[in-house]
View 1 (cartoon, rainbow, N blue to C red):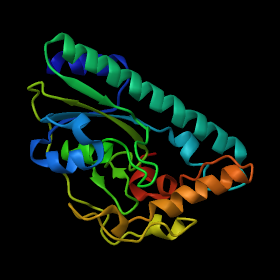
View 2 (cartoon, rainbow, N blue to C red):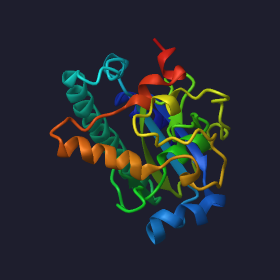
View 3 (tube, rainbow, N blue to C red):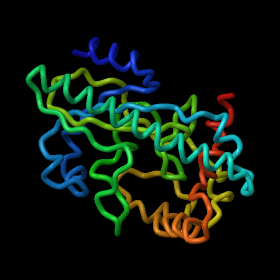
Length: 233
């Protein structure tokens, strides 16, 4: 199955792929996804790199063209990820196993602002990167300039990679550039509440304010400034 899945992903130009064992994290998984996400010992993590040819122009607040292109590309990549997650789910089910695709960007709780399952945690456990001070998944090669999707499954897939601890060190670039001071400058610690590191409601209000003022609701400063992303080109 692994070889077939890898071939499918290659055909669809998926940049990152990993499989993690999440059986010991079931209580944490169910905290946000409830019964829907219960009973899946594996997660497939997949990522597509966001074009730096767009991200590199986000630092100019008056450049609406870059923001419009970013917004469009964000939606297109999410659609691509959702499509490939659906295809992989169908393949696994045809082989007699259970699989559950988790939307790339759908919120299930507007108050806490979260998805049914954390794509960042999946990618970290699969060894694809670590969670940075910006609360995004940071890869060695592309920094946080990657969008993610996950498929939960009980298929006996081989686990790929090992979970990575944070490697941001003393860097505070994303904290300093955040226009609303939503990032609190703490390194990720497993099990620690997100609120200790990130005021997600400040971030969300900023996007709402931009929309209310007729602006393109795009920020991306934490993607733009991360040294791991900037060194890739």
